[in-house]
Amino acid sequence: MCPVHETTTHPLKRKLVAILAADVVGYSKLVGDDEEGTLTLFHQYAEIVSELVSSHGGRVFNTAGDALMAEFSSPVEAVRASLAIQREIERQNESIAKHRRIHFRIGIHTGDVVVEHDNLEGDGVNIAARLQSLADTGGILISGDVHHHVLGKLDAAFESLGRKRLKNISAPVPVYRVLPKPRSSLRQLLRRADEHRTLAVVTAAVVAIVTAISLTSSPSAIWNTIASRIEGLPKEPSIAVLPLRALGDDSQEEYLSDGLTTDITGELSRFKNLFVIASNSSFPYKDKPIDVQSVGRELGVRYLL
Image 1 (cartoon, one colour):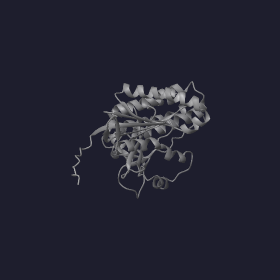
Image 2 (cartoon, one colour):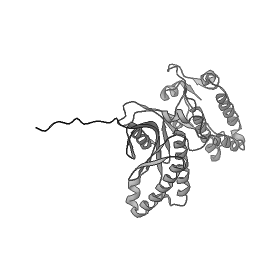
Image 3 (spheres, helix red, strand yellow):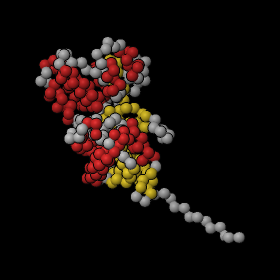
């Protein structure tokens, strides 16, 4: 009888990193329509993505088909890289026919991962991949853990999408959308709006509201003076920004009012103790007569702006 030898097991090597997951939107259809052209363009864009990841201190550790995974020691650099990637891809697409353009969606999560040689595995990687699958075309989604680390450190705004249940992830994950325009765009948009007299009153109100919120450490202290209170809902601060209405019929003014709505939502979502409803949930109420109590309950918020 052969002796039985005990097998020595070594603990798994782990580390805490920020994971960026990127994927091409509608890749199969693009390949089906123009295989050679899509593959050539994808490889060019993949090289651009890799270079931007490296320039922000990251490392691409996995590529499969049209997907790419990268690690960063800093969640701030991971988000900076994702913004740079989306800006550069958009710039490159300007010279490409619309039906051939390649767009990425990106998800970022900070978590503990398992190190397997040059590869990384575990829930930290899986959550980033799930977030990527939920992102809009050309969009970026981050987890609540990433949001906690980057808040106030980037020239970007964040929109809370609430807690999401992700496939094969046990607990719901807080999700935030990284707005494609920097915070400074709000100031630029206000300056442009100031040129339109019919938006002057709206502009002044927006400046007052955002300034007040920016200068107070307790946003809930001023809600009663700037928003309509919705009764019968949980006491935790929660708000929805209803679409602003341009006073004139100019399509440019309507564009500006929509932009202000989105940017105000983004500014409010910077506060960690405030739940803000995504702007795409409030836009269906645009140009419709509303009952404050009913809309508040439908959106699940205590306050409407």
